[in-house]
Length: 188
Ligand code: PAN
Ligand code: ZN
Image 1 (cartoon, rainbow, N blue to C red):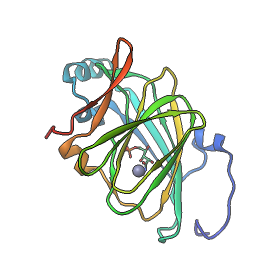
Image 2 (image 1 turned 90 degrees about the vertical axis):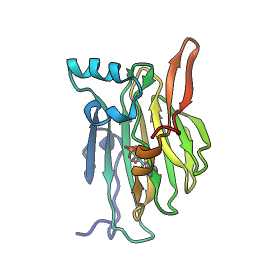
Image 3 (image 1 turned 45 degrees about the horizontal axis):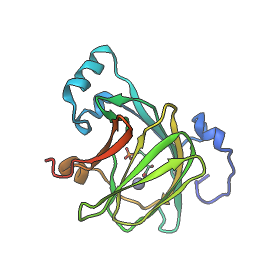
Image 4 (image 1 turned 180 degrees about the horizontal axis):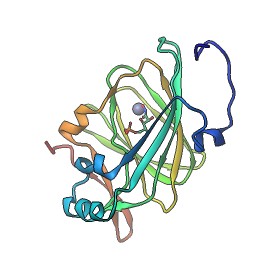
C-alpha cells in the first residue's frame, strides 16, 4: 500500500514513542562537534560518553508536489560549554515553507535569512511557528526538560545543511539572567 494514497490517523503519543514509523534519526554529540564553539567542552563530554542531543521521527509521504511530510523532534536538555543543545539547522533549498507546533518543553527557534539576519522566537507548549521560504531554522532547548515539537512541510522539500556548515548560523548561550542569542555567521 503506497503511503499518501490512503488516509490514516495517529495519536501524537505514537510519535513520541516512535511507533509512527517512516524514518528516524538520532544525533549524538560526536556527530555534532563542529556546531559547538567550545571545543574543550566537547572533548570533556566525549571523554565520558556520547550523549544524544536530539532525535526525530518522520512520516515520509510520496514526493508529489502537493503532499506533506510530518514528524516529531525531541531535543534533550543540556549544554556544551555555554551553548544549549540544538539541532543542526538547515535551509530548504527550494521554496518550501514549514510549520512547527510545540507540544512540551521550552526552547527558542532561531531563524536566519539569506542576508544573515537572525531572529529568535519562543517555543513552548501550544506555540505555532511559521517558517517562510529562505529562512534557515534551528531549534534550541533552553529548558530542563525535552523540547518536543511536531512539524509539517511539503514532501518535495530539499534540505540544505551545507550552507550552514560552511557559513555558520547562531546558537543560544546561557547567561546569568537566562540566555542570549549569539550569531557566528561569519565563521568559515
Ligand atoms: C525538522 C528538522 C528536525 C531536525 O524536521 O529536520 O527538527 O533538525 P535538523 O534537520 O536541522 O538536524 C525540519 O525543519 N525539517 O525540515
Ligand atoms: Zn526544515
